[in-house]
Length: 538
Image (tube, rainbow, N blue to C red; front, side, top):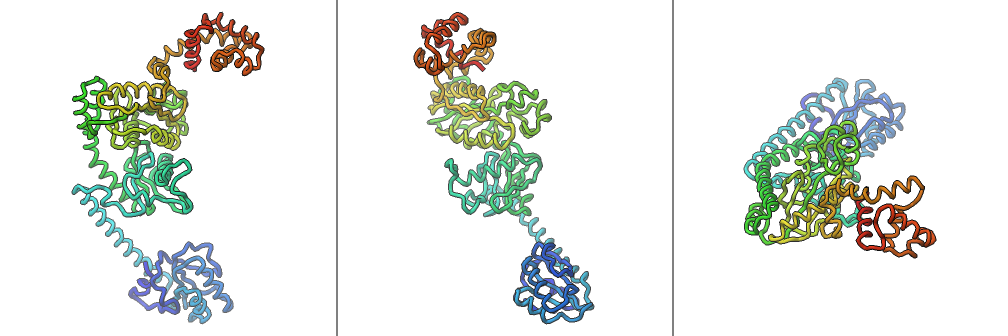
């Protein structure tokens, strides 16, 4: 409200004694005090009412007014009921500090002045609420008429983001920033994406919604249409908390309107994935690609991904690390900080996360794996960075993905097979983020990724268990000796130097390894067996 609106209210006139040109200052409440220095109790924007009991001598007026001006109050009302007319020294002090001063005649109580202020505030708030309701109805009607969410979105100060930090609605150049921030982070990430990830991290770590976070010197308010903050969820970030509920409602309406189209897109993507799995003819594949809105000429990249359970989830009873997706409930409740309870509905979350990471892809679930086909190449680095953000922000999360090399229509089924092998290899890694391109795998890695885990471990144990038992019984070092010997390409001299052994000692150990394993390290095929056993050993 403006001070002028209060002074113009019906009733006994409140004469203005100083600051006639400052009557349009905004004010938001009345505060009564007779302290000489009440600054510690003031937040700014108050209309201060005083009976002037603090005044013992003329110099006190300067002290009192300076404290008010320093606290940013809107105006001063001086009551004349006890001490008579407002003294000239108080008027002069208000003029020096450009603080509006009005007299409160003896027949007017401070309660009446406060009521006048509250009447103006209530009227303004009611008018603002009415305008907001009208604006909201207009925006909802515009959305219902087919407009995009961006067409009704505020020009500045508000965004819709994915849980991986990508801005969907709102101006990316308007994202909050520290004044000294460079346009890119040290790792080359564009600033708008880096800031988006900071907002997304605050969102995913929020225990309740709405939430608030601070970037630089500004506060931002976060909320989402759903009841909890979870990976794969879009959310709203805005600087003005009074707009948050309205913007979340618009986002929810837009999401509901888009859900039918999304379900159709996912059915078409499922048909494409089934076509790839069945190794259909190129014309049938081209038709399925066209139905998904993808070009029929390529090149394409195939992605296979999951959100495997973390090691902590496995230990707490939610399943084995290599095969369990988020959604098991046995261990989540007992390890809230280790594994976020917001990671649920495994297939749904994984599909939503991949759709966020790979915009424009055809995404479906096939045999518990998320399969995505995208008309693009070179996404390994982007996916690793997005996965790193996700697993850092959502406590306990893991992200494993395999990508094929670029492929044409005729090679898509083979590309899916390679992506699946790369994904299996990624799942076996202990890293929280494992994004493996099929071109990154050595030939034996690609082959071994397709072998069941139990078979691989049995092979490793068959060859290495005798060495481990001998090391335990004799305090020997045969396993490390084998590793070093193979790493030195079978060079006796280099291996002995590396292990600080005499060559004869090394030869004795190698003979012992041969006796225990039944493998001759002079033979290339036997060396390969032992090398693979070491690679497979967990």
